[in-house]
Image (tube, rainbow, N blue to C red; front, side, top):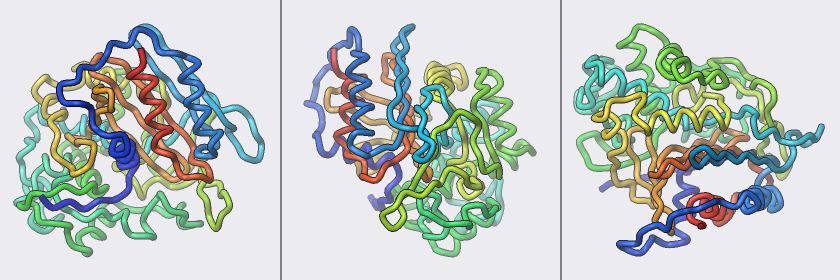
Length: 374
């Protein structure tokens, strides 16, 4: 299998697991009776105390019991506490919303996972007659990630260029001009934001409406996710929110405001921990998809790393044997994890990276307290 690796937030999780090893074969996770609130808070505090985050918020839910916590400051200049109910950029967790809409179209028989891209978007990509919908949703298409270009990555500081507006077709063309990592008929896996630009273009072609409209009508409104949005070219976030920073020449620079059209359907959405909890619970609980398409979403492919990937769905197994499903996201100034265990416990973490790179063991500690300790 061809494997080419980039560094999205999901690979940070992968490094956590690689460092700690795999669970013993046949190991059965111990049941968790009650997670320690103090332990969760200490794990969140560690991100800030280690200067891995300027601010962080967490929501953990186990059945009817919910814990929310926060640490650090919302603004390096003005100070203020991080509001655990605040808004943040969810980055690539957006991909799960896009995949959900695409799979709803599959349920409606307006789209099939084995449809060639060429059928719906003729001439968009080379070899589109051999690249399927399934392949773009699970990142096995081989198409180049336009965000690997230095001037087109929203995880790098781009100065005033961060307010530029980009068109989806423009982003796909960058990938086409570069050439693929591998051809769609070859066995391979490569995380590529271009896949989800194409997925949203498919949604728009089939429905005749903006993909954000479909997300709103099919997911946000039915679930009452009033604090989740598809911002388009709007550069700001609703209040309250913690400000996001990036280190430039050794100094933190405020990167909160940006035009998210560069990420578009690959990572533009804004949400809250409560809304992401509600969405993930509804999705994995079968409220949004048929049993067949939900099973397809959760059918994963080998990525060559310590996580597996389905259709807009990431799956990791903790050293204690607990499997988590969901997605993670990274957009300049914001890192997000939204995951749920097989028994329905949910954790949403959003933090604003600090001056020290995240120590993977700090994340493992938080996940371990939430899902492994009894």
